[in-house]
Amino acid sequence: MLDTDEHRDMYRRLWDLVGKDPPVPALYEYAPDMPLDTAACFYTHDGDVLDPRILIGRTPCPAQCTKPDLDRATLNELISLAHERGHERSWREGTYRENSMPEERRAWKHARDILGSMGFKDWDAFAAARESSLAEHGHRGTPE
Image 1 (tube, helix red, strand yellow):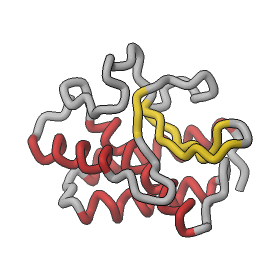
Image 2 (spheres, rainbow, N blue to C red):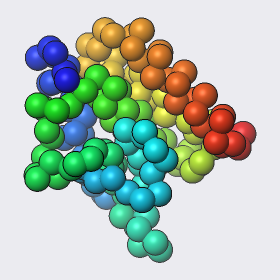
Image 3 (cartoon, helix red, strand yellow):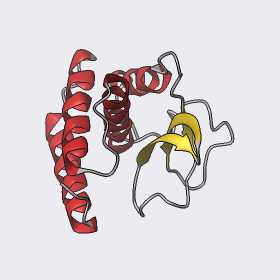
Image 4 (cartoon, helix red, strand yellow):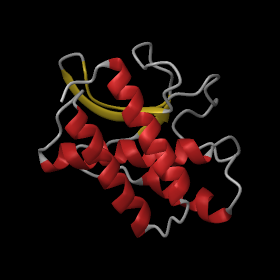
């Protein structure tokens, strides 16, 4: 669980960082195509329809899936949410390349910038999450 008010505030701010045109909401849902043990995923489309969103994979999902559940949020989930906002930034900048190692590294760089601007200090936890994520993508065969 998030053990500081600072982390809880960052989580709330990341959740509410919806953007405009189009908005990219975060919500709790465990999508069937999410890899096991994935905390979050960024999606741009639902089939052929533009429907950008960030899914936070929790089981069970909170009853209010569109509101941040700070009571059960974890540091790993906070970092993962920042990483997915990093994918969103790439997408908005026109550099997003789904399912590629360069995009994964770029999203982690954006996540570091986003969290840094919020006063995040747990860089050891961030580095561990980043390395674990990149290793998992490598293991799954995510292409360069």
